[in-house]
Amino acid sequence: MVSRNMICPNKKCRYEFFEREKGYVACPSCGQEIKENMPTNPARRSEAIVKMLAFRKFLKLEKTLIIITITLFCIVFIIAILTYAPRYSYGFRDYFLNRAARSSVYIIPSFLMLIFSQSTNNYKFIRKTIGEDAWYLSTFKCKLFKWFVYGLTIFALFKTFIPYFYNYYLGEFLKHGLSSANMEQKVVYFYILMIYVSLAMIELDLIDLYQRHLSRKLDRRYFK
Image (tube, rainbow, N blue to C red):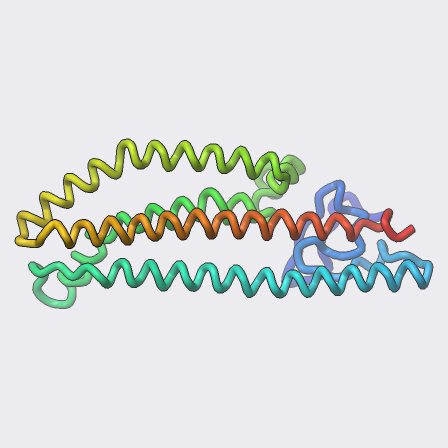
């Protein structure tokens, strides 16, 4: 029998198992072997090891995909900020501050990605906050509900903030002698970021769902 508060033995992971995960032969977060759950039968033990190694291989692929996704987002984000150069800036400090202020709208896609994807897939943090109920965040139904809320958020954003943002900054651009083309370029980059964030969130959620699916196959009841 495992302890009530089962923690991954990997010191770099320290994942706290949910109640229904306490029979897993490996950690569902890092793939570390849970020796007390491993089958005693040699044939079943070999089968469990094969499953565990396959799961670890997927975790490495998952890590690579996440790094690529975040890196590409950072590249697009930086390009969007550096593309628009205010003609009325004087000196490096003013130039930098003006770019940061004029590019603050690009923070919105980053914020949405943080709230709707990474935070809900961070089971270590959520587990400590809401306890055993955090398990339901890994279900397909919860992902669908999250996407429904995300869709409502985007709808409200485009109905309220975007028109205000466009009208305000268009006036600012014209006031400082810039053409409306500069504003259109800014809006195009915003749309690109929003589309990228949506696709990245789908990717991260699908990866998360598949990881949880594979981890459930590590339950010792499958190796009896």
